[in-house]
Length: 233
Image (cartoon, rainbow, N blue to C red):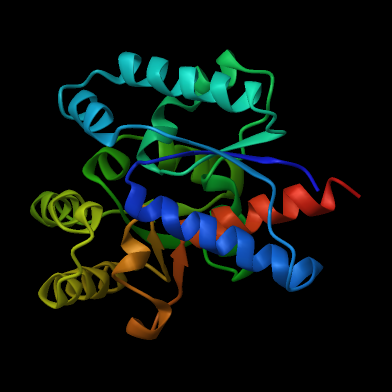
């Protein structure tokens, strides 16, 4: 079994499901007393969030590059960055270490393509919805178009992530707002919805929607287990 290097804490609320998913899937694959070999470096999200808000992406990339070097020094075989938004600085991470980065877009794209979908909605932080890094990779590698809500709804989705989900607050009214936005995206032609912030799976599950939901946290963790177990054989 290879050692998974997690860079977490963005927020820690969504890093917990990564740890749970990875270990549960490892036990399902190998037997009930098995658990994954994991190195976890958890950042202080307050520092990252301040840099996001002020456009300090280069400095944020340097912080995560340092985290990646620490994960490599601790013996990880590959890196899993436990956040969608900070894949904006993925190049800074890969340039800092000799380890491969398991990019969160790729297992999501695989899952969407397996369902035969070509147009999906993207719910995420405003950085992920408005910047091109996430949608461009999905289009270039998988031929899948991701559409986003209008500006006012993007702001509301973003606020719920930071003001509620990142702080462990699950609010029923916010779930209903998300579902209304999901419905509008489907009316605009989305065949499924990407839960493109690692906290959104804390609020929405497949049971809440009639269209396929693609939980990036779960799909990323699943891909990490496959890489850790299958590549070690």
